[in-house]
Each structure stands twice: as structure tokens, then as C-alpha cells.
Length: 133
Image (tube, rainbow, N blue to C red):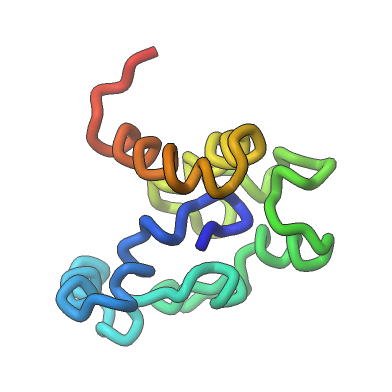
């Protein structure tokens, strides 16, 4: 449950809302959409679309990965590219700023190790911790 761009779907409130009605109602209220639109099965399952956004076209990353027959962007010879830029594909939320960093960690650590040991820490640090450089 990791998107081709490196976002951890398994940590996403929209994904978690698919299994938790109380969370779905909170997410729907927060996004000002119906509870039916406040869910996501993950980018790969949704073919790069998110119900609440009413997207005109699927995510460019998902389209690119499919065309190149890759699993993750870091496998591409063009990595990193403009499809991963924070402004790309309506990436209006903070998690999209973590895409390239997560992809580098996945490449270095492996998907399972990253998912188990680092994904949640990266997200929590970005949102809730005082940054240290």
C-alpha cells in the first residue's frame, strides 16, 4: 500500500477511512464531501484518482509508471522528474512534499523495511516534531 510516488497509503486518513466509519465521517466533514467520497483504496487500486477531488485526469505519476512498466519512480532513469514536484497533480497537501525523500529511503532501505521502520516516523516528524537540521 505504497503509491508509486512514495506516499504511504497505509498512513493516509482516506485509506484508513475505508475501514473505519467514524473516521470516514470525520474525514468527510473535514473535506466537506459526502462519506462515500471520503475514502480511497490506494493510488494503485484507484488508478491514480481520488474520489473527493473529482479529478479530470488520473495522477501523472500513476500514468507514467504504468507506461514505463515500473513499480516506483525511483526505478526510472529520469528520477527525480517534474511529476514529483510538490505542485504536480494538484498536490496541495503537505504529504506530497515527502515524495522524493520517501522514494530515496525506499531505494536505500527496501520497501518493507522503510514501511515498518521509517514511513510513520517521517510523516510524524514532518507534521508534529520540531525540525532539526
